[in-house]
Length: 193
Image (cartoon, rainbow, N blue to C red):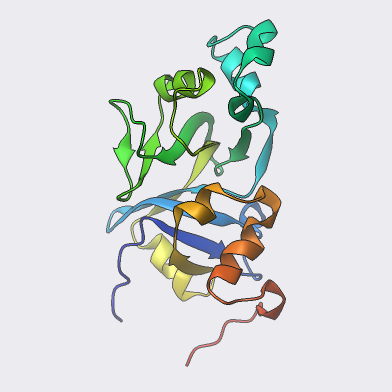
């Protein structure tokens, strides 16, 4: 069996037969993938918590100041990034604004997990495009490859447009459409040629 190439800066798209309900219809952006495992963020499951609520909880601003946030920050949805460490926040963003702790994922996308980025976004000084997630999805060595082999996930290259633009609820169908697939045509039964 040939090893799969590493898939950072790719989307994982949950197949209809996904056994783990937490990942039903999930689109995951893979931030890291190596022989040691993989880490990614679910980008199409909104949280109840709003971005201003997180800023207040972290003491970045007072509740009464939330109305003064730039509109993009005030309306920024927070996503359920995955089932692991749900109290930890991550910001995926374009590389036009970085802080010391920002880690490049691709030529144009970075990942930052510090409050510096949240402060910048709250002041309207952050990156052109950003999304915030609480928690992440993780796989041990060989686990993701096994799940892909068992027809758990489709993969496709990510683009900034697919990552940052469009409605969260329509991401699943949108990412599938980008590779010419209609979700209605996906089968829950795995097949092998």
